[in-house]
Amino acid sequence: MRHLLVFIISLIAPLSAGEWATLQSTTFPGTIRHYAIHRTPKTDPQKEAALMVFQDGHAYAGGEFKATKVIDQLVNAGHLPPMVLVFVNPGVFATELKESPSWELQKKYKSNRSVEYDTLSADYVTMLEKEILPLVEKVQRISKDPKQRAICGLSSGGICAFTAAWERPDLFGKVMSHVGSFTNIRGGHVYPALIRKDKIRPIRVFLQDGSNDLDNEHGNWFLANQEMAAALKFRKYDYQFVTDDTGHGGKGGSKIFAESLRWLWR
Image (tube, rainbow, N blue to C red; front, side):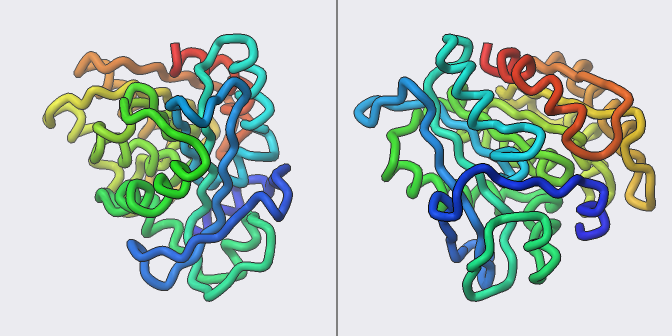
């Protein structure tokens, strides 16, 4: 997915280097990834908190989204439940990572981003379940109720978030996708057809995309997201689709981030 990374503005994570940890994966052998865990205000280690997982975690922890700041404010205002935020980056093929998480890191090493994010399988959500969430539980007890668990992503991270909930609605009941890559990178263009014919999952879905999103050999991103929205509407899913005139990146989604979070967690 390196050809897509160039369309996304490089973002700097506000979490200090000491707050980012690394994990060598057994689900994706040979890969290592950055992750970070943030507890919002009002969380109690003795009580279960809600959960929200972010793919391309550094892009949400910092840059345009500033997820920790926005969500902390919403929790303090009573608009969101106390929750633990988990920022997970794609795996790269390396033995150790001394650098801070960034888009550049995905270019420096061989990235496993497309395999993990664009593949229509349960592999990635299995990695979250077996490798990431046990680490979260050491920091904060989290709810087992999928309605209290959300997963979010940008571009290929967006389709990854949807795949995680589609494959394991028992683990994630809420999806937030920004400029999601529901195109034929690794077969993701089939989702509208699957949504129309497969069993309905108990998931809530928020989609955002811009009319100036990508149009290349994999497909047209804006059209693909419109097809997703039409299929979700046809099957009467609890969904929202917000459009604008932005291109591929976080500009559109970050502008409505707080509002969309309130909708997702209403």
